[in-house]
Length: 182
Image (cartoon, rainbow, N blue to C red):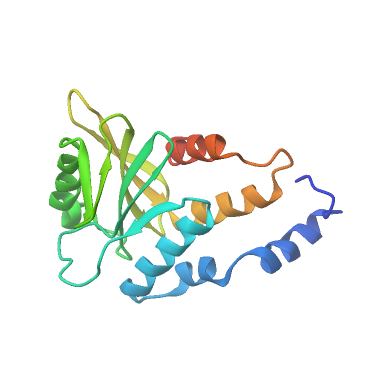
């Protein structure tokens, strides 16, 4: 059973989940609009406690990432897709995202650059599928490429609410680093 003063039995947990869970997590599972999926994903990342999450402009975006975030020692370029069979379609994009990390810094916009050379680097393809490692890219600096499920982001949000010891920023960083690895 999950812990907390507000929980009495397992029936209460699902009622409480519905009460506490922002609607956008369910919308991530329902929308067929790619723009909304991207927007809601960015908002979900912010709700998880990732305050250095940047949504990249949606105009003239073909082949570009949807966003980028850092948390502690983790740097992630992410791309959202509603397609279940995206691997061949996104292969070149994924390689380009990985190559961006080799520069040691990422240009977020004209006024902002993030240093990433000393961080764990990951590329996330955010989907409605199953979280898993897709590949390791590089020789000297290894970039992990992962599929990350919105269901796992939703679960992580609820875990943060229910954790008796509270999930610190360091713990959140560790949980994000390890998403899709079990």
